[in-house]
Length: 168
Image 1 (cartoon, helix red, strand yellow):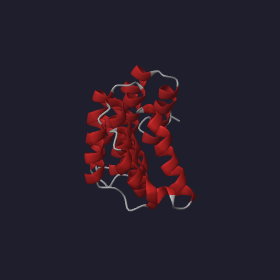
Image 2 (cartoon, helix red, strand yellow):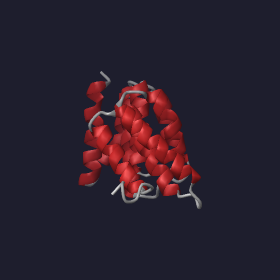
Image 3 (cartoon, one colour):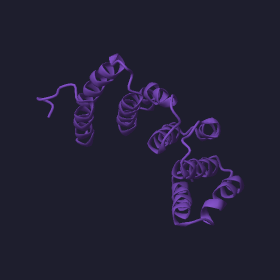
């Protein structure tokens, strides 16, 4: 596919994902940087493509435990309301930096998509980060509605409680 359509962003993203899965981070960086340049020059600007490349590049840096290198790519996600993957990538950034208080402040201000799953994830992350700061009471208060909700809510709440073992 790449040989037939070398500017196919989906194909290039797929290649980068294969390289990341194979832990060939330097090659994936080069591929994603070239794709980012291509997407940035595109007219009209394709916001979805910009977000997809920024998500993949920040995921690569977080997978390689380079949170400082992930930050500029995460910041590119700030345009449209955040979807689940973007929110999850930001959460991983704060986890790696052990900046749970900053994560709470960021989550409280973040502009997220009007989607039940995204709202659920934000609540779960707020509870998780409150627990990570040692604020057990506040963390449980945040998670309580999830733990008393439907199956998706309960699973999100339990996942936050499961994360607690990493903070003790």
